[in-house]
Image (cartoon, rainbow, N blue to C red):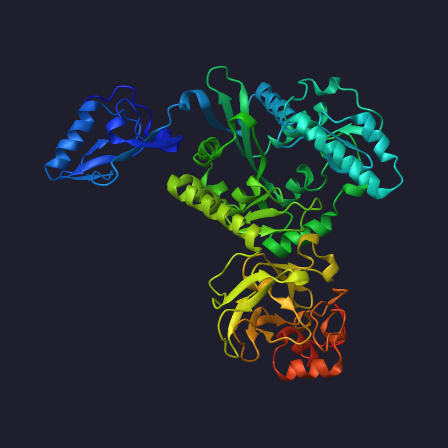
Length: 566
């Protein structure tokens, strides 16, 4: 090893920092982000955090010329090494440190509360104000409040919608360039408008949250000490978290009250029990707050913040279930779905999904492990999201490969065979989260037209897989078996469209009011299995193409007649 090791930084800090690749000959004076060693003897010449010297580089070249293997750099075809980005010191002069929430001094707690409050008024949240007529619609500080007041009084709902969308969009553009005032209470809002977060209430609620066992990671500017971000994870019973999070009241931090927005505890607890098997008194971990100043947002800063917390969490807390509210789309959605094992819509009334892990350690694994695993998981999640946006499905191993998904006029996307497919072939399987509902109309809006019924009160929803792309037909060439498996009921010719009758699994109150299949025996509308003409029901049953849950009911195995709508 060389003795030129001045300006060494911690190996972990170098490993998680932003990096770039440079030619080995140009690495002199740069801080290494990877390990380089020659074999034999296998002892590292460079480790993350050391600074390359000309002597070290010459030694590697000499050893390679003498026949040694240089591990960590391709000396033959691409002699490049990974080093820390040159502008690291200017770009992210921050530090992260995690504390037990219960040990924080009062002045730090108040600092956290005020930072939390101010941050939600800025990009990308813009939770500054709302109007009583639409309390769940956030309005930025730069809104033309007088013009918006006029729009509220418009009697034509379409004109009102267009006007308000125009005003909000213009306000968002202005808000990106001008931060809100530090003293939010000094802003005089017109009648009918309210602040998203009241200063006194915000402080009280944050102080209350921080009395629970948990952890707070504070991200500060290294030189000034200014708070630039925070991450808060805490433990409580399901009931405690429901009452103290926005899960029960989306305007929890506002002084404005609207009982119509409050969730019904029984409805919430029933859904938590159904999806996660948890009772109101069971302990649960949650990510209560996650805020980063826009000027330091990015994967490396977030990774460093998460890593700091992951190293602090006790084994007892890491063994508990984790549930967190996340946005329905965007970067945070992609990130959280990559780190957790379940995503469930419809538990919260604000339409935000909840991500869930049976043990918090599952979500922490990619943080505590190799950074390459973290990057791979995020890249995979981002790639799936892009694939879904372009193809509207994500291929699964169970999908038939001899098909193509392509636009098909008014029918939207459709599935066509690329070669002859014999009868009885499995085409795809519906896979996703299982939901419980008394009626199809009781399902969350996002999945109402994309769920398959698998029982009197059970539905499966998910955007992955080919099954969700097969169109309906009143004269189909596919059926359903094993409740979720689409299969061909006859031989399929190349270039033929694959279709199935949605009513072969559906016997709820769901109705597609207009059928576009164009078949000679088209029924015009698509309802449930019981709505089928008698001859079509008999035909489908004879071909064994109807879901077993319906045939069991038809045979009286569950004690219900076949004409009982769910």
